[in-house]
Amino acid sequence: MPQNAFAGPHTAKKLEVVAGYLSSFVTVLKKQKFETIYFDAFAGTGEIPVKASDLPQLIGGEDRRHIVVGSVKRALEVRPTFDKYIFVEKSSKKAAALQKFVQTRYPALLSKVLVREMDASVALEEFIESTDWRRTRAVIFLDPFGSQIPFHTVERIGRKTKADLWYLFPSGLGVHRQISRNGTVRPEHAASLDRLLGGREWEDHLISVVPRDDLFGMSEERTKSCTADAATEYMIEKMKTCFDGQVLNEWLPLGSRGVHMYSLLFAWANRDPKAVLASKLARAVLKSNGRNNGWPK
Ligand SMILES: C[S@@+](CC[C@H](N)C(=O)[O-])C[C@H]1O[C@@H](n2cnc3c(N)ncnc32)[C@H](O)[C@@H]1O
Image (cartoon, rainbow, N blue to C red):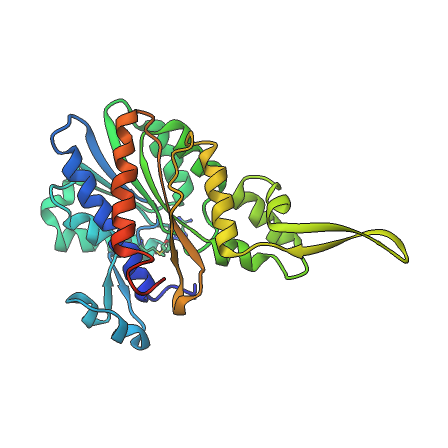
């Protein structure tokens, strides 16, 4: 079972940030002529079970029923509503449960909702290509368990859309943990890092190589210089190259039991100078839910 198939306090924190942003987004856009779309690439079923041991740390109505309200339900609760919701879920069982969830709990919004049972990156590519970005504004939420999103998909969002992006980047799980202390990386992990980070340059940034002149001649000493924070900073710099610098330098560190496994990142692809408002709204929700607000730090 993937490690976060159950929700914990970090899950609720992440979803509060994204939902807070969605509320600000629709409020700002309600008087504008754009079609608004919420695109949830790893949608789940609308609700996430909670481990009994995490219950005391979670507060609020539905959380007490061993369930954390998922991203889909939070998005459907935002008012005014989006013009369209695209929910992508690879598991056929979960996609069917999600369709039923929308039908029974949000029948009034059913005509605005498209549930797609497919791979997130494939669905994203189709969405990017088929959308008229002159008349559309969107929020894309990437909430994978691990390293499922190849860098080129993130790159395409930055170069081709006018969307705002929240990305749960697996900085600890997908990067830090893949590099051993002595700076070696198993070939299958290196291939996963190449895909996640878009090339092999991560080696120069996350592993330090010091030349050594010893009894046996010149050799080199490799050590890991990667932490989850360093991996996050590296990813932010990579993303800036395809979002024309429009990536927040702040992030929300997340993970079970306070271990930094993921970093929630924000970027905005609209080059209109007025779109800088997106970064201000994102910074505000991060600040009110983030580092200075107790767990997680
Ligand atoms: C972390 S959960 C997302 C939870 C959801 N955002 C929520 O708040 O309820 C990841 C979900 O993505 C689905 N998934 C895994 N790999 C996928 C892929 N390649 N494309 C689309 N969905 C995928 C899983 O079945 C799982 O439901």
